[in-house]
Image (cartoon, rainbow over all chains, first blue to last red; front, side, top):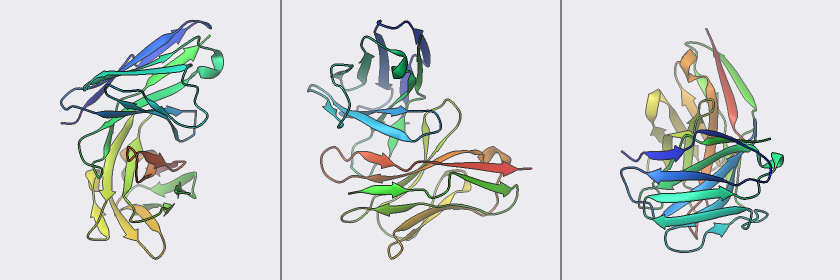
Length: 116
Length: 114
């Protein structure tokens, strides 16, 4: 149980275009999902907390107009990288938690974004 | 500030030998601690957690971790390493309040040699 599906697994796009990444909880409902970014050989950096039916909460330094998050249902959150630039190239990972603050986060398999 | 430290970038161990991956933390209040493993180009997989109770926590794939409150540590251990254990390991702590988000250590790469 507690499977998180992320799509696409990799994407290549040109500078100036936008890319949407989907994160789905397949067998549970997730009121809250988390979006992380991981640079090569580095740790995960929390970008934002996605909340079903309300605005996302962004971490300090993350541009909310650049990284649009929509959590339209209890099983789907999307991250759209708008007007992508090469420096946005990274590994993006979403996660969700079953109910309860002590429940572990379950992660998607990540999306490798390359902006050319 | 709440934080997690993994002092070793890489740990090398021979197959069959015991392994330890170190983690120390700094939190306010009681810590909720987690270990995750990441294989190349994949998301993270949950290994184990400490919330309360016994200081020795057992998790997936034969891993265990020991919570030490006085040393503020939560080291990951395994009695006998396998080559397939080679991966990137992350320690994480829950930040209380808000959405109970997790913050991660920098990660430790474990290399198990045949």
